[in-house]
Image (cartoon, rainbow, N blue to C red; front, side):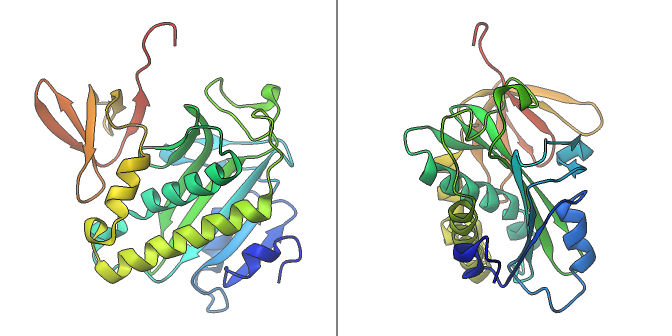
Length: 257
């Protein structure tokens, strides 16, 4: 048991906290071939020095200002299409964990896997596949001061006036993530498992004007209308729906907002 995370240790198959590391995802990937790291093993740190986000973006947070969490998932849906929902399931689980400690704020998921509080990013999630597993990494802004926030559209528990309970946050996240993945694997379908409806209900992107920068430099601008059965974002442009499976999606804000 990790004495610093007793609640989480009761849920995780294995949990290890590192004093510092370049990337918890990279470290957990190196351990993924070891049977002593079973399904729902967790590697975490409060000092990640070479974190990596979507689209190979890198970021560094001051020591102690964020919590980097990587979870090893071995019990996966058989259908590759259903596996595409894993990042969304993680975003939903983290949104619920964050909301439990910020009950007076609007906590939502930005497609495909950011967590927003009152429209500002508090957590980013990156899922990476190995040969027979998936590693889900998340970086939560816990104690960042206003001066330490990486961009004006970010936020943290400290900025919001709340001292986060790291153990409760992690245990809530793991409990919901595990439950959603068990149901997804059993049904092999996000609609049947209820994941599609749950993510749709929590997704802040739907109904908004968005700009999607696609691989290859293509840019689409339209209204996000729904998530399809595979978790792709449907964007309506002049009455025609386009399914986006990868890309950088920005919520287009009216002038002055």
